[in-house]
Image (cartoon, rainbow, N blue to C red):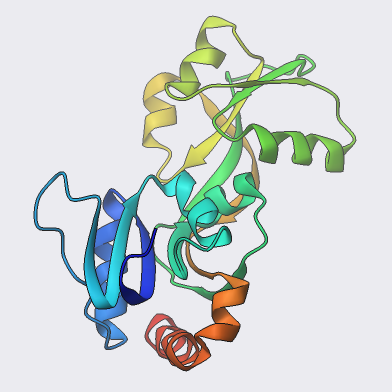
Amino acid sequence: MSFGAELVVALPKGRMMADAYRAFAAAGLELPRARGERDLWHGGGELAVLELRGADVPTYVDLGIADVGVVGRDNLLEAGRDLYEPVDLGFGACRLSLIRRPGDRAPIRRIASKYPNFTKAWLRESGLAADVVKLHGNVELAALVGLADAVVDVVQTGNTLKAAGLVEVEVLARSSARLVVNKSALKLKRNLIRPLIEKLRRVSG
């Protein structure tokens, strides 16, 4: 599908989207706004914006539907897509952590996570063996009710874990919002994308 735009930008819905709009504006690029709640993509001419689930942004950029995108590094680690990642935008900071019940030192035989690919890669790199169960929400509950011996999930302040009576055992990776670029678009649209990268580096530094 053609969006009739010179540059197509994929943005994640939710809290990160407002920060992304501010970052692009600071770099001198005013992105088009949605006309309504059901407006899945908007713009045209010079710019078009796709509003996506954060986990879908790497796929849309990698497959060339969008030229550039903004996505948390946690989703990049899970997606494993071959994308150019030139700018750490600095907002949306969090960490991917191993979480357990307090004082639980039993061997980990099963881990629940919304990030199964990342979790399996971490297990391989650590020389550990455990089953990984993919969940889509309420991951902490898996540790509380015994579905899993541990969970891997995003932690920001840690308040949710404390409220649930769980503890952060180990930080496995740190995440923040990244600008990602389709490698073919970087060559074909370098006159648009290269200046954008440099401006975002300056305002994010």
